Length: 483
Image 1 (tube, rainbow, N blue to C red):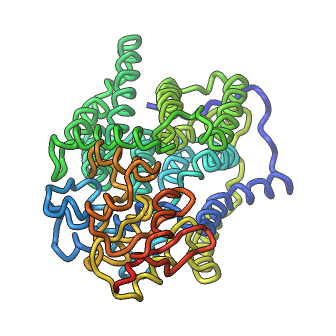
Image 2: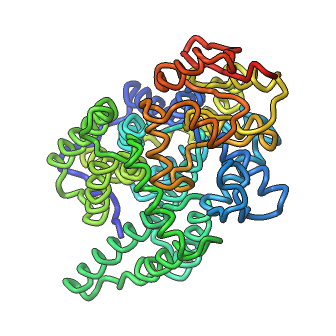
């Protein structure tokens, strides 16, 4: 377990106008983080089917066991991955619309960072050091931020790390940790990251105890490690979550999803820059303040960085794990002497941003989402299967179900490898329009004409189909002429 921040031999910085301004700026960092998130566009394509599924879960009173969306899979068994997140986010949207959901999601996403930062402050880290750590890791993880159930994973992981740092009694730690782990896995299927963190903490604590028997045994993290392993299966999917997760990872790699691929591939180069900057700053701070290093914090950060290198999707967990590492290292030559700054300033600034920004800057959607095209199509009153590029499938579901079904959507685990190959054949012109029609009998097509050029070309030349919409981003909508 982490000890209090050690200070170096340099004298502490004295109070003064400059120090007070720096402390005030540090206190405003959380509000600035929230403002940045609220000003971003919604870009995640999967949140739409997640929300629609959440609405069905709310109406049903529990997880849905049969497929409702995919035209060729209707009635098949449906995994309950993230069912609690889907239901809760759908409820927030039902109550307050997209603006409320955007704020709620941002607070969950940032809550993971803020929780561990608050724990660092309780354990002795200076306000400025904590603010520096938040700025660095926030920029590193920002590309992953959008409205999505992964925000719950960030919150739960941050709460877990905070719980580890607070040094509560073992029984209290186990009780709170067990509840957190059970909720986590039903909100987002990533509690295996918690098992890694807890296992590392237990191992480091055991080594420390073997070297010095006066130190306490790491009972709480050891027990919670097994609880985390058990929580992986404490969902409606049970042990089948292993095969579901494996299929999702396999199909994600096959389809070329960049978040599942290494940090060094070309499509992740831009994302790698803030990650490498954070690593460079952290190394510099650690070299200056080596006596402040906590073995568990450093090992966890290294393990998650290794995972991030191989699959960019782990960057969010790595960024949260880096908060205590940087905060501890950056506090080595500065004692916190800013007690004269009221603590309510941070809370007031966050509250001001949370209330004002949704009113001043309503929710905006990324232009890559075909919302205008689908709104135009919905006015046509069509029913049936809408053949759309698979990233558009979620928006089709959210806007048109139950009148509309989809051929594909972003649930990689829903469709077999052969189906994804078939999709690739359509996009590359190997599968002609006549075969697509025979397979799905679509009522309409919603595709990006450059991405799906062969299919778009055949539709444009066909006498049986007419284009009724073309957006500035190249999204086209075709319906039958015989309507």
